[in-house]
Amino acid sequence: MFQSRTHTCNELRLSDVGKTVTLVGWYENMRKVSKNLGFLILRDFYGTTQAVIETEEMMARLSGVNNESTLSITGVVRERSSKNPNLPTGEIEVVPTDIQVLGRCRYNELPFEINRSKEADENMRLKYRYLDLRNPAVKDRIILRCNVVAELRRSMTEHGFLEITTPILTCSSPEGARDYLVPSRNHPGKFYALPQAPQQFKQLLMTAGFDRYFQIAPCFRDEDARADRSPGEFYQLDMEMAFASQEDVFAVLEDVLPPIFAKYGVYKTASSAPFKRISYHDAMEIYGSDKPDLRIDLVVQDATECMADCGFGPFEGQTVKAVVFSDFKATRKVIDKMCADVEVQTGNKAYWFRLDENGELVGGISKFLADRKDDVIAALSLKPGDFVGLTAGKKLAAQKTAGVLRKVLGNTVEGHMNKECYEFCWIVDFPMYEIGEESGKLEFCHNPFSMPQGGLKDLEEKDPLDIYAYQYDLVCNGVELSSGAVRNHDPEIMVKAFQLVGLGEDDVKAKFPAMYNAFCYGAPPHAGIAPGVDRMVMLIAGEESIREIIPFPMNKTAQDVMMGAPAEVDPQQLKDVHIQVVMPEKE
Image (cartoon, rainbow, N blue to C red):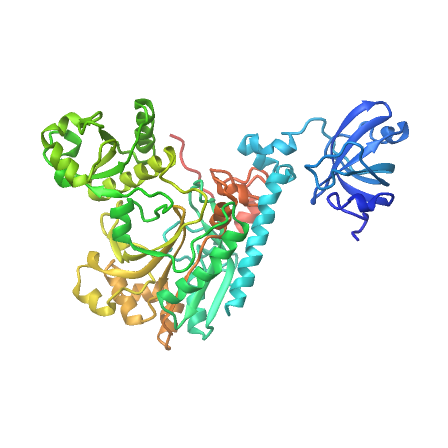
C-alpha cells in the first residue's frame, strides 16, 4: 500500500478485475475517440496503465489539462477487450469514477517528446533533465546504476571490507589533474581542495590499523569531458588492503566484478578468474594500447626491419608497425574511410597494401615493396588475401596509431571481434618514470605513491627509465576501469623516489606531511585500486556515453545547464572568502 494510491501503474492484472483502485502518475497521452470516449495512458515510476474515459463528466475533468500533468485516478478494473501483450498491464484497464489533477503542467508544448528524449539535442536534454529522466529508457539506466552500486556494496562487505567515508574538504595533492579549490573564510589566502581521490586517506587508514577499507567515493577533477569521462565529479569503488600484495587485490576484484557484469550486463558472459595479465611493454607491442580490447583477435606486428629503406618517405628512419587482416575484401572507399578515421583519432596517417590471390602485393604503398616482396611476406607471415595496415613514426606514436588501426579494423569488418562478452585483463609492470611530453623532464608515469619493483636498490642503481613499479590497470573491452598499485609505505624509499623527479625530503614532508609522518610510525605493506563506478555502469548498460548513466551530468564543457553552474556569485560572498576576481583581458 502506497500513500494516496492502492496500486502502482505496473501492478494490476486480471486477478484484480472488479476491484476499485486508485492510481497516481503522469498523464502521458490520450487517444480521444469522441466527446465521451478516450483512452488515457497513466505513467508512474513503475510502468503504465490504460484508463478508459467513458463519460462526458470524466472527459470534462481533463479539459485543458496538458500532457505530463500529474493525476489521481480512482476507478474499477476490468478486462480489456483488445489486449496488449507487450505491456505487463496489457490485459486490464481502469474505468475512472474520479479524476483529480495533482500537479498541472502549465506548458502546451514540451521541450521534447518524453519517450523519445534520447533523440533530442544533448544540451536540451540536460537543461530539462528532470523531464529526460521521465523517459523509462533513461530512468532505467539510473535504476541499473543503483542496483550495481548496491551489489558492489554487498559483495565488498561479504569480502570483509568496511565502508568508511573520507573527507571532501582536504588539501591539494599532485594526483595528475587540476584540483577544484575552495577558499577558506577563516584562513585568508588559504584553500581547501576537493579530493581527486581518497588516496592519502585510505593509505592512512591502513597505517591506522584498519585491514580492509572501501567506499563508493566521490572524486573531483577539473578535466575536459570525453565519452568515457565526465567532467567535474565522478565516483569510484575505492578499496585498500593492509598486508596485501598485487595478487591479493586481483583476487578480490576477480571475484567481485564478473558476477555483477554477468547479472546486469547487456552481455551475459564475463571473464572468469584469473584475468589475463599483460605487461605494459607487451600490451603496447602486441595491441598498440595499454587498454587493449581483447574481444578483437588482431595483433600488432613490428615491420620496421622489412620496411627499412623501401623508398617510402614516411617510413624513413621511423618505427613501422603492421596489423594483418585475413581475407579482407573491403572496397577502396571503405579502406580510405578507415584510414581517415585513424588519422582523425590519432593525428597520424595509416597506410596499407594487400597480398592478392596470385601472391602479388597490390594497392596502397605496394609499389615501394615490389623489390622485397618475399621478405615482407615472410616477415609478416602473409597468406594470399591478407590485408596489411601500416603505421609509422617514433616508437610510441607508431604503436598507439597501430592500436587505433587495430580497433578500427576490428569494429569495421565482421569476424574478428566477439562483441557479446566482457573481456577483462590486468595491465601490469608499468614503468615507474617517464619523460614528460610537455616538460621534457623525468616524471612519475603513474601513481607517485607506488612501490618500485626492486625497492631502494633499483632507485639507487638503475636508470630511472628502466625501473618498473607495482602498478596495474584493470581493463574491460578496451576501457580502462581503474589504476591501482602496491603502495610505497617506506619513508626512505618514498623520499628517494621523489628525489628522482626533483623533489627533496623537505618537499615530501611539506606536500605529504600526514602520510610521511604516519609511515615513520610503522606502516603495513598495503595495496589498492579504485574502479570507476560510472565507467563500469556504462559498460554494463552498453552505452557509448558516460552521461547516460549519471543522474545529473554536466555537459561537454563542464556546465550544469539545468542549475546554471558555474555562475557568478554575490560580491559579498567573494569578500567573505577574501577573493577578488580578475577577468582575463579580451584579445
